[in-house]
Length: 410
Image: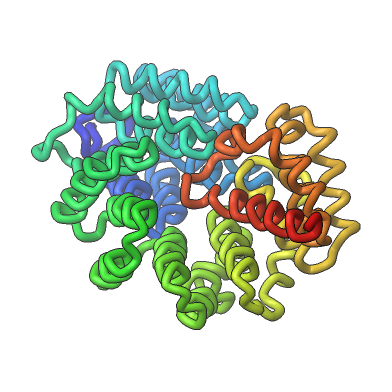
């Protein structure tokens, strides 16, 4: 049996078909990816890569609560790995490394797979995602450039590859090429949301708000069945309205689209890391512009209190602090800071902790302290992960503190 990318998989034809559907759901950011991944396990309980796929999907939540089901999937995969191909066994090892917190070990396994099987979409997508969340834009681009000669428009899944390449180019500042490849990905497959996202980033970085709104509005009819990633696309649309100072439109998108608490997508995973980033950063941006956001911080702060010590998504950590500080939950904010300072992770101690302390100081009006805390780590913000457009909220807070401190000094 082979998958959609002509790679051997150690299962039967029925389970293979289910696996191919799950791969499409994963690559397409579909809402049913968890159910599709579980269906693979049900179709063939002896399929090691099927268990591995489910484990991967769990780990992509970047939540401590998802590690236990991922570890269960890993144990099942390891029980059946002896009869798997060498490529499938490498995936099992990668999942084991990821669960153990050795993300560099996982990346080495995925890169080894790609060196031999450059169209392994699982290895490609997982390396792409993790390089991004680690802030390693150069590695994200290089990974795709190494396999690019083995991809073409005749290759299944090419629009998805092109979308990944477009985003990597955008984060490298190669805006014309990124826009060209992103638009081509969407032309080939109008449902390609990662390609739509790459172009949205280009338009954001080039301050082309009118075009950005039109771009996303024109593609929205093709997004039926997509998952929580839609919220991030709607966040991008809100960013374009923010640039035009259309604050009512931003709040409407917040309440009806990317932070609609009655939405089934939000209800299914109310503290999904990208959703929290979308919501907290937009509220912070609005407040920096003098817009009252009402009680919207409170539900985010409730979730932040439950996630103290959960640092699997480094870029989400400052957003938890934004919510805690905005809602006046100083005891919880101090507990989070203590946890970060005592972390085994140098990134948490050396970058996340001072950034979070600065966010609390900004909220309390201690602008000189914000500058003292953030200035030494401005060059390291990329290590927290996220995109240039996302990290800009921290730069805006630093700049706001600088202006306010200068006024006080004058």
